[in-house]
Length: 56
Image (tube, rainbow, N blue to C red; front, top):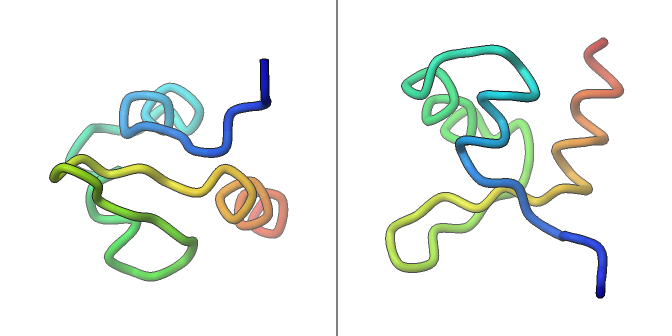
């Protein structure tokens, strides 16, 4: 099975330990790449992981 390429909002909540509304505000700041297929946020795993590494 291929490695996952996107995170969900719930996964980011768990990774960062933050609230759902806070997760929804992060993509609006254009800190990392995201898409909204079918109205649901999907965050690029690579761009999020790079952002997280840079901000730790």
